[in-house]
Length: 174
Image 1 (cartoon, helix red, strand yellow):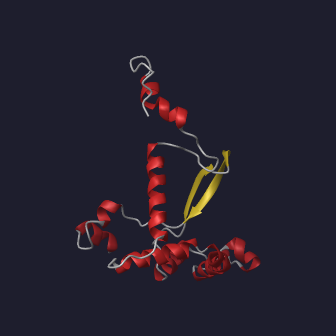
Image 2 (image 1 turned 45 degrees about the vertical axis):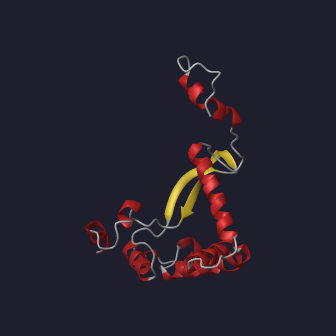
Image 3 (image 1 turned 135 degrees about the horizontal axis):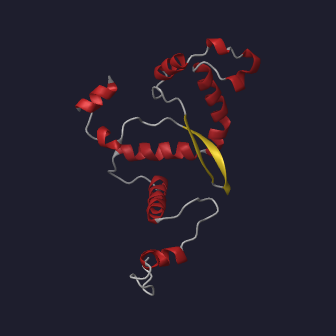
């Protein structure tokens, strides 16, 4: 991506990144473009091809499990049919939510520790029921939007690869 027509002593940025800037286009659905997003996009495309491919003889069984999981995530019709009901059932198990229950909502019955306990019982990450954030709207980069997402795993990868017997992992688990 170096622009060899630029003098690095005069403008090192244009020298080092000039061709990337000239050749890269930020698509309407994207908010950024960089070397890492290009690598990520290539990885996602390779994974998609792998997940959509047919099983091979002598392939580990887990590969087919991953393909089935991927297909279930891509089954938009099924997701659309069941997701609203599933989400509302989950919210009810957690004690409800004012905008969903309207006049039936009892604020004095609501406590975060009860929601946290209910979340733990059904297998959600303790203390992180939902992840909230503000980001750029991918359809209109002049606007911001609030994102509601799944909870995080809690521990960084460096801890998870140490295994369950690691002291830090044990302390987190307890």
